Amino acid sequence: MSPQSSTATLIAGLIDVFADAALSGNPLAVVEDADGLSEAQMRRIAGEFNQAETTFVMRSGRADLKLRSFTAAGAEVGGAGHNALGAWLWLAQEGRLGPIDAPRLFHQEIGNEVLPIELRPVDGRIFGHMKQARLKLGPALVEVPPLAAALGLAPEDICAEPAPRVADTGVAHLLVHLRDAAAVDRAEPASKGLLKLLGAVAAEGCYVYALEGPVPQRAYARFFNPTVGLLEDAATGTAAGPLGAYLASEGLISDSIEVEQGTRMGRRSILQVKLAPEPEISGAGIVVMRGTLSI
Image (cartoon, rainbow, N blue to C red):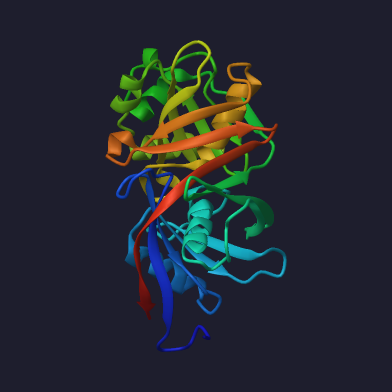
């Protein structure tokens, strides 16, 4: 199909990513065989689906497949997060990748990067495991009051250790440690203030989190990304990955952490993060809608 074609039918669907049950996790719209779509069409289709992200699957000369993802507001996003994981889980569950009866390694072109993803069968379900890039850290934020105001919190809600700072394993996000899960749930960001702050530190989104215990095995988190028109996201692999890597660099965890996200939105999601030493994100998904897209 050429971008000028007046009518085309594409296979599309909806999958709940990082979900243990339907209507939980982070929903992702997926469009197959999207090579003939123009970028403008992709943006409009993403707006039509009106999900946090829509991923378009295309042929690649550098990898097994190429993925492009857009928010409902039309902003393109990269990184190995729920947008990539969900697309591969969709393809596997729809039989597009052949049998997944043993671990299989694929490679995906996302932006300028080629990243691996391994699909593994576990108890009748397919889990995806994606490695991210090595951690890059920005300087610690020392001015807490402006950060607290941007998040709708009191300065005492923000922990000094680990310090708030930008972390990047593919996408740069500001990580902010809050004193407890209640503070995480109280956060009510002021979009303009948060946008200004994120711009000043060269970050895309903001991940607020609380840790359970002095040697944490779990984190409770929320993600805000006004830079791409996303008020809140239910599961963010590109933020959970750098969180795990940052905590490891601070000596707070050794090799893994489980992150609960989306609960405040009624979309509880569980993200598994392992360090080896680069972060690896893993999770499963549930296909909740299959159909065709006519444009």
